[in-house]
Amino acid sequence: MTRGNFILKGDIAWSKDPKTIETKKGAFLVCREGKSAGVFQHIPGEYKNLPVIDYSPALIIPGLTDLHMHAPQFGFRALGMDEELLEWLNKRAFPEEDKYADLAYANRAYFFLRENLKKSPNTRIVLFGTMHVKATVLLMKLLEESGLVCLVGKVNMDRNCPDYLREKDAAASLAATREWLLECGNGAAGGGGKVRPILTPRFIPSCSDELMEGLARLQKEFSLPLQSHLSENRKEIGWVRELCPKSDSYGDAYAKYGFFDGKAPVVMAHCVWSDEKEMELLRERGVYIAHCADSNTNLSSGIAPVRRFIEMGVPLGLGSDVAGGTHISIFRAMCDAIKVSKLRSVLVEPDKMPLTVEEAFYLGTAGGASFFEKAGFGPSGSFEAGCELDALVIDDRTISFLCDLSVRDRLERVLYLSDERDIKAKYVQGGEIETR
Ligand code: GUN
Ligand code: FE
Image (cartoon, rainbow, N blue to C red; front, side, top):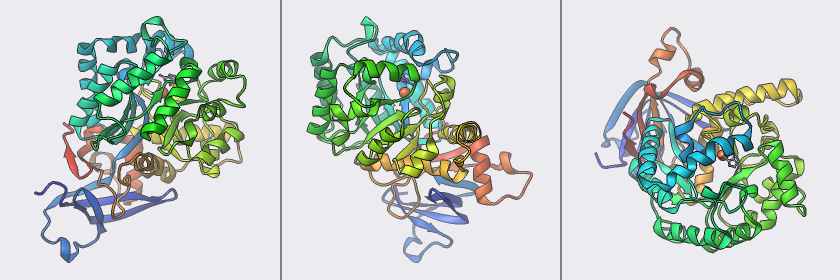
């Protein structure tokens, strides 16, 4: 079989738009040169010679997209879950991230993460590394071998963190960032690979003004995408108000550094406490929000106003935020997003409808995938013709065997009930990934 040229047969579902899940039973998904040529009830004549892999009666859906996770935090998931953000960072995240100065430790930990990501339903992931150049390059190399599409960031932090993790000053942090860009094949060249760099100032409390301004210059020089955290926790937001007295809001402070006027896309995790003005700023500048419901619950951050994000038209996707979140699966993030939106609707905003299954599925596939397209990859997250073919084959017979359900209803059960053992095959950009 020529790589990237084949046909998958099964019960196929994908998100046509936020309100519509398109389904075709016993249908054929045609892959040409790694891209979808469409879904057909019968194989069109021009594709008759392509090999057919018959997965019937399994479900075939697009791969899932995680817009926010921390690679070095995978190893301590589900620890410190009684703490809030700032305490948790100091007690759990920072001491663990310090260990990545040791490349042997980084290799063990990132290999373990990589194997878990391969088995997961996620096919595209935006990751934080640590502030260490060598360990972050190593992470990118390991991920490149996996076949997953990833944007990975070397973290910047030069203030308000323990000495062992603090870069000496802005100049040292910027020099280390240039060294990392050079070593990983860099944004300027685009790398062309599946794993590419994304600038990653941790958040305003841990980056000086000078560092932020230098990173905004780098962002423009190389047209690099950028990720950070925004308006996650009330204490954090109060702290940012003290650190940036001239800014109207946390988001405005990022805008004043110049982060929101580059060509490449920006994704901000959380925005739990964003007010209308901050949301309007994000919408106007096309800044993505990574909605991380699991983390926001675990760290008692709050419930993000996700219905308002959608009404306003802020670009939106889902994030696991491991290890604020405990699970890497974006199926889990979809269900968590639905559940917390119901709580918000009942407890806070009765006039706002909770998220539907259709909307959550859209956010975790095509919604998040559009960030990768803006970052220079092809379109994905859907089976519309022309999309890079990321697909999951899910054997849901153990989940749905007692009843005769529509493909759409089987998909809803998969969101809530499936786990990695149900994933029969996984494709990224038309190439199959080892999941066992
Ligand atoms: N804000 C700054 N750093 C972090 C982190 O590691 N996790 C989360 N959830 N929020 C942050
Ligand atoms: Fe985070």
